[in-house]
Image (tube, rainbow, N blue to C red; front, side):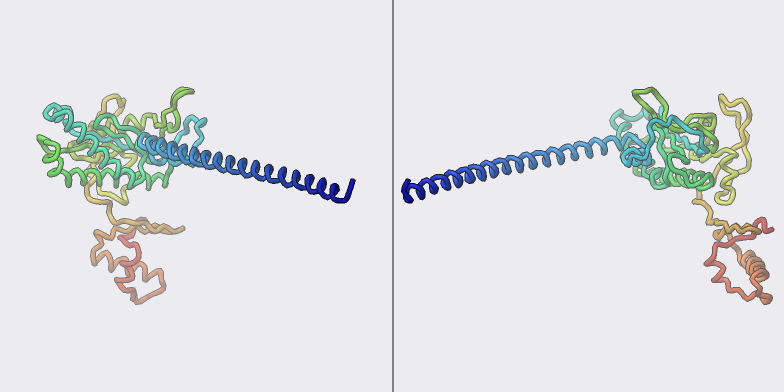
Length: 334
């Protein structure tokens, strides 16, 4: 074979090699484009599924207490844990004479009113951190102490603060409600509150669970709501004992609630906002402050008392500095 022929053969082989490499590159480019398209489709599918899940979770959030919803979607809720015994403050409310009122109003207006009313009450509940257990027509059951708790006293205080704000909100909405929903009379609600131990958690079957609380303390709160007067917040003695430093209560009232085998002491709560009381507690003292009722004489007494233990024999403590510190008549100093 001549040199020319050898050179031609070499060029043919080189050409075949280049042609093969070109086909391979084209094939790889096609495959890369295919993979890119698959990735794009997968990304779109993921986004679509994400939007679908977010839509479902948003709908689901309307059926669950906000605290429970947050625990479910954060993964912190143990659905296998049935229930546990906790001290709760339980709230029940309903609309006075609602059956009679609903008979005088068109069904469409009643439906619109209930949506409006429950939305208003739910917003106040969320503000104070309550757990809405259920709506029963116009009635509402709420509790404090699970799934999150700020302690027995603060849970009870949040509940009563919420109840007072609800009553005040209803009073403020009277003109709007009568005009917008053709109410024949002013809207009034009654509220019952009790504090006690309950079983709270997941109840139900293997296929369906209901997050709720059960126990005698629940029943008593419901009975107190039935015993409450129109526009009243009625609390049990257990709740009153926890909150004596924060609210004004009526004199003791004894009721005989249906289904409760013994008389029950209860108290009406003032509709004023919780008193401006705070407590300072040390190893050897407890100082309870009611700034809203602090008189000049109380202030002088407090000034002298603080000066005595602050090593100020002349009692030279400015009133302004005391007012900036949580202050009130001294309670139970040791």
